Structures are given as structure tokens and as C-alpha cells.
Image 1 (cartoon, helix red, strand yellow):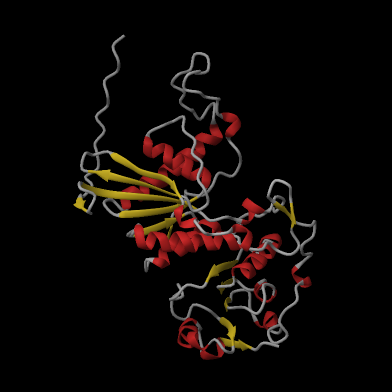
Image 2 (cartoon, one colour):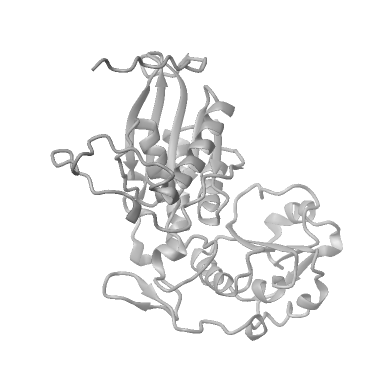
Amino acid sequence: MTPEPTRDIPIPDIPLEDRGYGYKVGTELYLVRHGESMTNTYRNLVAYDPNLTALGWAQALRVGAWMAEHARVDVVVTSPLRRAHSTALAIAHAQGLQPVVVPGLEEFSRSFWDELPAHHPTRPWPGRTDWTPTFEQHPTFVAFRERVHAALAEILDRYSGRRICIVSHGGTMGVLLAAMVGAVQLSAWNENTGISHFIWTEWQRWLLHYVNRTEHLVGLVPSSYARVPEAQADEDGLWSLPDKVIGSWSDLPAHPELAFLSNRLRRSDRALFVHPPDPITPLRIAIRSGGAVILSDDLEQLEQGELRRAVLNANHIRYQYLFRPVPYPDHEFDLVVAPADCHQLDDELLRLAKSPDAVIRWHDN
């Protein structure tokens, strides 16, 4: 039987240059999985869009610092989901960049593994040696794969010839890796903040440089990042939460100097909390606002607050590690709350506030 002729698929005209590899290269693609997320850790947490844990933020800062030294990039693109965006923010800011959100890189919403057949290279399933998933037989997987492929094509086209970092999720990265190596029957495990690197070479093909690189995590001790006090350790290393970590937003206490602010905010207002006094006050105040951001370098406090935000489904509140410069435009916030002794940020706080009166200071009790 005569095989079908190979289709002549045009190769994009990707600009090439010498970057010290010993051969000319064009586009470089770094794939990075997000840091440890709340649902990676808390077995019974149900959250639409969980953020990072304290350990996850530490991992994100580590991968950001490592890439700034060893893997400079021109652009950082990210899934819209919090755990990826927070990781991308650490990577981008370590290189003086802002992350670019690209829809389509989100994780799959439900398991599709039951749709996939078992496979072993020396024991193909009966009559199938060239399995290709179809929408009719594998709709969940194919729909997810097509979404991710479309996002990848958009990114590679938009940033052709540049050094790109894509921050996404375990399932998304599995599809991306399979697409890059041209393997249908490939699954790939990626550690939190594991890095994979592909290079487009002068030979007009992708060179796989490395997969799931994690030496930036050497010396990082997970047990040194405490879980929230209410959590109970399971035998398999995960954690569980009591049935009611929190009842409702009205149960949340607030710092006595700031409690009045929950009545001051309007639904359309945006609030910024810098080094908040505790993990609860920003939630108690901002639960009624139209949007809020919490910037802090206390990673365990961020995890405690993020857990409560997730339980309350307060999806308009975003937790971030404090990066300098603060990644927001002038006059972005209707309310800026900061410690009275936070003078090193005075100019930055005034820049971010819509008016000088919008900056509220609090004191330690």
C-alpha cells in the first residue's frame, strides 16, 4: 500500500540570532508550573480559584530569582488563575517585567483520564498502534487539548523569535510538552515550579533542552512553612480543614483602628492593604468592596488569609507578595491601608492612592 504523501506545512519565518549556544536560535520557550497551591495541600478545600500557599510563594520567589540569573526572558505569559498568576508575578518582577495574562492556559475543569486508553510501547492495545483521540470518543480531553493548543499557537505567533516563559498548570503543561515533542501518547509529571526549556534552532526544529528542572528548590525546607493552625495532618502528607473554618464574613474580627473602614467602602471601590496587621482585617474590610489587593512579605499570614478568602468565595480579593515597584498604575486605589511606620513606601502609597486622604495608617496595639 502506497503511503500518503507528506503534506508540505510551511514553517514560520522565525528570526534567528546568536545567543551563545554555538548555533543560531530563534524562539525560546520556558514552561513553568505554578508553586504549591491551596488545593495541592488541603484535601477538603473546595475553591473556584485557589492561590498559593506560603510554601508556594516561597517556591515562586525561588524560581523567579533563579530564572533572573540563568534564564532571562523577554515576556512572561500566564494562565488567568491565581496560582499561576502569582508565580508569574514573581518570575516577571525578578526581571523587571509585567506578566501577560493569556486565556486558554487554565487547568482542566474535570478529570479526563477515563477517556484515555492504557498504553505500553511493547504491548499496544488490540488493533491500536496509532491511537489518536477524537472529539466523538474523547470529548473532554480533546476540548481541553484544543484550547491549550490554540493558546500555545497564539503565544508562539505573537512573540516569534523572543524568549518566552509560560506559567501554567500540571495538566496544561502535560499538553504543552506533548505538543512540543509531537507525541500523542505522552503524559508528563511536573513538580511545582519545575522548568522545561525548548529552543527553536537554525535547523528549523525544536530542541528540547531540559524538562522539569528544579535545582532552584534545593535547600527549601517545606516543613519550615507552617500550615494554618486549624489544619490537621493526614497520614499521606496532605492536610484537612475542620468543617467550618469560618461561618460568614460577619464573624471576621478586624483591627480596632480599621474596623470602621468596612462601612466607608463602596461596592465600586478598590482597596490596597500593605503589610496588614493580621490575615483577617483585610478580608473583613474588603469583603464589601469592588476589588482589593493585599501585598505582604509575611508568607504564612498570606496563606491564612487566602484560606479564608477561598472558603468565603471572596474572589474579588487578590493576595500577592509585595514586589517593588508595586505593579499598579498611578491613582489605582480608593483606599490604601498601611502601617504607620512604613515610611519607606510613602511616595509609592501616595502614587497609588486617588487622593492623600485615601491613605489610612494603623498602629500596633
